[in-house]
Amino acid sequence: MKLYNSLTKKEEEFIPYSDVVKMYTCGPTVYYYPHIGNMRSYIFMDSLRRILKYNGYKVEGVMNITDVGHLTSDSDTGEDKMEVASKRENKTPLEIAKFYTDIFMTNIDKLNIDLPEHITKATEYVPKMIEFIKSLEDKGYTYMTKDGLYFDTLKFKGYGKLSNKDMNEIGVARIEENEEKRHPFDFALWKLVEPNHIMKWDSPWGVGCPGWHIECSVMSTDILGEYIDIHTGGIDHKTVHHENEIAQNDSCKGHEVVKTWMHCAFLQVDGRKMSKSLNNIYTLEDLEEKGYSPMDFKYFVLNTHYSKPLNFTIKGITSAKVARNNLLKLLENHKNSLDKADEELLNKYKQKFIDAISDDLNTPLAIGVIWTLLKEKPSIDIYNLIIDFDKSLGLKLDEGIIDETKDIPEEIESLAKERWEAKKNKDYKLADDLRNTITSKGYNVLDNREGYTIEKIN
Ligand code: AMP
Ligand code: ZN
Image (cartoon, rainbow, N blue to C red):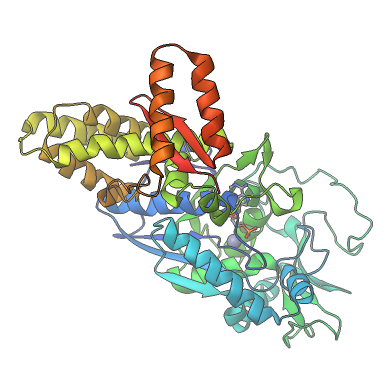
């Protein structure tokens, strides 16, 4: 199996340290509703876990829940996101964390994401974080400033290797930044806090809370050990969060801890990252209200390679929905057939499919293989093979077509039929008028290669 390693900047043959693949994923900060951009990153984690398993590997995964320490700015300034939410909603940080973790987990479930074996909360790891920081201090990698203990990046040879950062770069001076920092890339390991801060712990450096990056180093090595095969996250974490994790890990353990770093590209809106701060987010629930199922979204995501930015549009998700429905219809034909398929033909497709997923998780190509296979003569063997392929995609293909037409009134059905006839007869004016009538009555007609589907507008 080949995987692209962001650290070596190469596609490499994947060779795990042992017979169990140790994998860590940066989890969500649970201060707000997860958006579908966040969920793209976890669909990527899901594909990786499933494809490893499909290829016969055992996987042990960890994903953290950040419920303390993630500040509103990446430069160790600003407020803790959990505290901001706590004031906004007049709830304790614990209540905030529980509320948004539950919503996140519901999203994970709806998207049929294979959850890592260990889910860890930052707040439950603070004593171990203090131990880890002490060990960095003993080894001489830290210094104290008025607002907390910092990591001295100049002491760690190789700082910046993941994102090709230049240590001579001065960095953009920020007014609010701690002027005692020795280098712009230095980062907080322990931040001292004001007495009115809600989340705080005692430590050898004073009352405060952990810096954001330390939690991932501590939770990953505590559970998975000092040799971790794969670490995943969104591309935004590459330049700061993951550079800092590498600095902490490798300085503490004295060797390279993570072998392969993998990053998922952004889900974008109009060419910009989908993010809460840009106010351009959609949640999975927003999509469901518009009539798109979580599996439509997953199909939409898997049709683009994880390393490529993906622009989210209603047109795009609608095409994904139509395509998925067509795929399910073709699959139904195979399911209902009693015919056998040629063994050689099945083997040929199985090999093509495995080649695709094993080439750095090429899910769009793998879905292409399924489409070609679906066009072969109907056979129950083809159905069974595609259901087997789906173990690596998690698209719930075995659930079959959900009949969405059953709530469509007869009047709408007949208007849609009339419109289809008009379209076939090239009477586009009549077809458009009928479409408008249908829309005014609260329904949408979506055309596809085989015909059309009708949807209620929410
Ligand atoms: P956060 O809760 O902000 O820590 O983000 C959770 C995960 O979602 C991280 O791995 C981010 O890199 C990822 N992420 C955030 N925005 C996007 C986006 N628009 N597209 C893909 N991944 C994203
Ligand atoms: Zn992390």
